[in-house]
Length: 408
Ligand code: PMP
Image: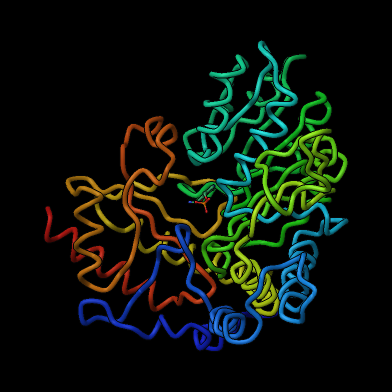
């Protein structure tokens, strides 16, 4: 693996040079939103300065250029995920909307009273609540894949949860709260043996490791642009073409139809357009494509290796802090450090460490069932990206020690 040149990477992010409360910014909230390189922000001035137009139905130059850039982004996403066909890539607002699309389209068409859907205890609320809402309406049952004390999914229990009524497994690839990397390839194989489908929430995997949806044999795979060095407002649902073709539309409107009539049934466009009603976030989608190109330029293997170093260094350093308890100690883990400190509230730590220029996240990380299982309602979470440095980890740990000294 070629080593990552972190100074060169940082040079692409002007925001990293700013100060917060008179201190150099140390941005360690990447699992919530990553920063955006110049190459991506430039898309916006270029788009709005040169070829802002609605797509797909223009017969004029600007519309053609916008359409070409938008559809070019779809091809970039296809290649990024290793999907077979560009029509398997649907643009959404983000992971949340992608999961809601699957629930409301595939779910309504395929789930009946008495059916079973498996979700894991590691899930973000966005891969729990859509299924709860639908279960209440359709009368299927949600079953929970348990975790062990390290925050690793219990695969024996996973096998045992399947019955002839299991229709779907909804699981994340990487946990946002703990960083656990789940064996989604094996989990997909088990689901398929039982005739069930698998939806993988890849929001935290795509920024940190290469993903191949065909190798995983994912039926659905979702991610958000803003966690992978892109903008908010654009995300992706990958679905196998055969599944997407059989699914009914979710939202109705322009762009997703073939013919509309009051006299005979309205007919729909083919995939992916059937699932893209209305004017999409055009500039954001183009910028998302640029972000993925940027990531591939740096190299996901190099990013994974670098973040593993940052995580190892941070883990060693914080382990020396008296009364600090790490949550999520999976052997296979992405760059997330989640912890609680005896005698110091997570919120207080978050507020005070911000005064020292360090941005971390505190709270339940939209994973209340997971935190409840570990007997806490909030943790502090530091999460890493390609541009973080070992020196920043040291500043974070020193600042953390200072803050703990202040609140204890
Ligand atoms: N799943 C996971 C694992 C996440 O980390 C997040 C964002 N924190 C989401 C889903 C939701 O993503 P978004 O808010 O971009 O829709």
